[in-house]
Length: 116
Image 1 (spheres, rainbow, N blue to C red):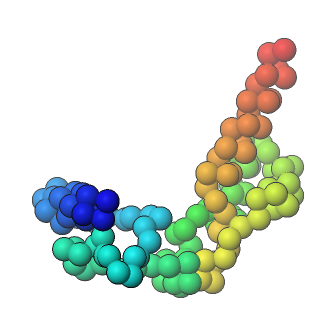
Image 2 (image 1 turned 120 degrees about the vertical axis):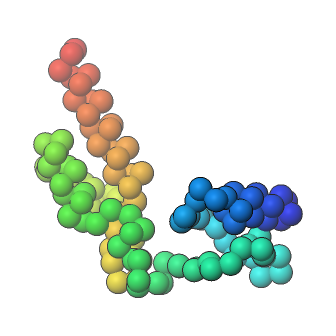
Image 3 (image 1 turned 90 degrees about the horizontal axis):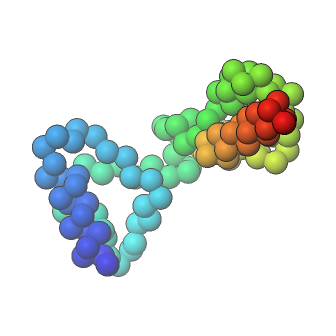
């Protein structure tokens, strides 16, 4: 598996003349077998890094704007209670998937009640 992933990364990232920049999320560094061998100029950014901390999710203001757009400001307390943010570096961010799916569920329920 290590050889397969290493080969995939090398062909998709290192030798791809059409690719200028790539972000790999969820990749774990394996101490004995590096899947990144053959790649260079990697920057490892963890949840403790402060340089990109606000880019690991939605900021609170972004969540507020999304809920305002869908006229769901009244649900912000629920969002804070159930889907409290994560701390990356010095920034508290919210999981984008959770927020988007919550708004989608609210909109689906609202549509169903209007049509029924």
